[in-house]
Image (cartoon, one colour):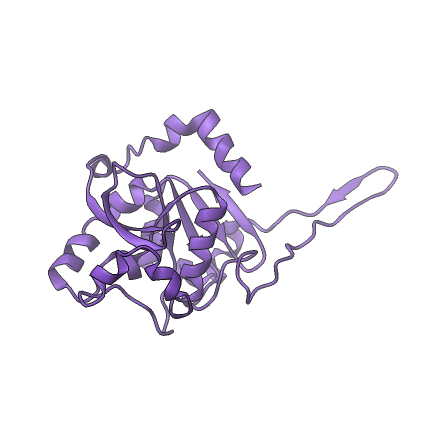
Amino acid sequence: LLRGALRECEKRHSKKCDANTHFPTSQLPTDILLIDVAENQLVKTSTSCQKYLALSYVWGSVPMFKTMQENLASLQVSGALLHLRSQRPRIVRDAMDLTRYLGHRYLWCDALCIVQNDAQSKHSEIAKMSVIYGEAFLTICALSSSNAGVGLLGFSETLPRDMPQDISGSTKTSAYVSIPPSLVEISYLLPYEQRAWTFQERLLSKRCLLFTATHIYFHC
């Protein structure tokens, strides 16, 4: 279903969705680190060279594995992230699995794709947020996760894999079917929407796959 929604977007209105007219700076290529989910390593590339997904989530107070100056070189070796799977927070592991599942190879995640203890590099990367999220093919938004230890619905081992069932019924004169709650109705309940940082990431994105605790929404 998710792959079908993306194919429909690309087939019918990709030019409109890819035309990021609100943020013209996103048309400028920029050098970034990406997670290669096929080789399980970091790669240096450009936003204009690779089709990639981006992850938008709330860090929270859980321990976070990060790219540092000390481990940057080792993380660019094939298989490096596979060996460190247990150290990566649940949300990052699920986002990598989802990227593979959707048939894509590259993912951007701030904890791994920004060198966290390099002040100059970190400041430079933060200034590129409009480019990074504006140029991403799709942004994965973890709306209900209050921290990086909470995974994505349907992908995480800690969350139920069965999606909520639609309820339908009928009488002689009427038919009834349930619909998921609109994001507008529940946004005030979501940890994600309380943070300006994640709020801007969603607004900058062309396409969003939005995960709550009970439903998945697609917006383009």
